[in-house]
Image (cartoon, rainbow, N blue to C red):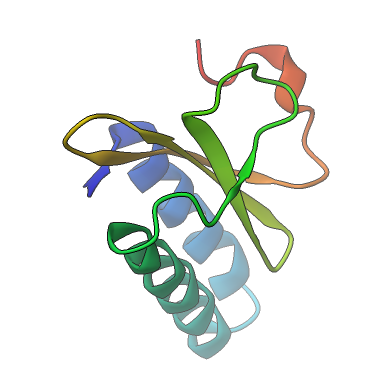
Length: 95
């Protein structure tokens, strides 16, 4: 599994935002997100197709109020981005 640079940045932003109130909870949230993505190695199609993208290979997992967007390729799974569920995803985040 590969984490794209934007996805790594998203994870850091999530951590830093939550850490303003609780460093402990920020760490737990990030750990839970990472643990959830590790399941993709064995079960890559557990996520649903992303409604805004017409591709069977671009999928998402929902955790807390975040959408973990990932792509299934021939020999890899790439985490593309992590988006808060209230954020307008149609604005071209994956361009």
